[in-house]
Image (tube, rainbow, N blue to C red):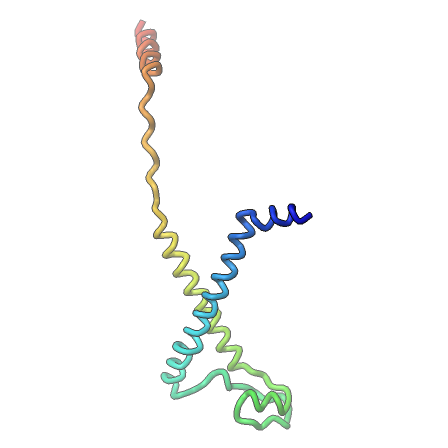
Length: 136
């Protein structure tokens, strides 16, 4: 059973998948940082210092806090600003992945189709015989 597991784990697809998951996780962290630390503060600066992650609607009368963390302690809230932030995050990740895949596809060398091989001497001779037979 251990031998079967080792063979399974060492197959190319499993190792490739593991590497892809690790790289994808690291890439996701980079894009999340890009969104949280660069893009959303810029959007906040453009809109007058707004922080979308703290936009919420209290679903009970007990909620009167000024930020989302305190409001959640007071009762149920509809955290629509956080949802908006995560939606923008998703769209940016999808766009960046689209650009990366497009770039990688363009970097792949498109090899031209190989030229047809020169016919062998036997084929040339047979072709000549065929042509001579057609003439007669």
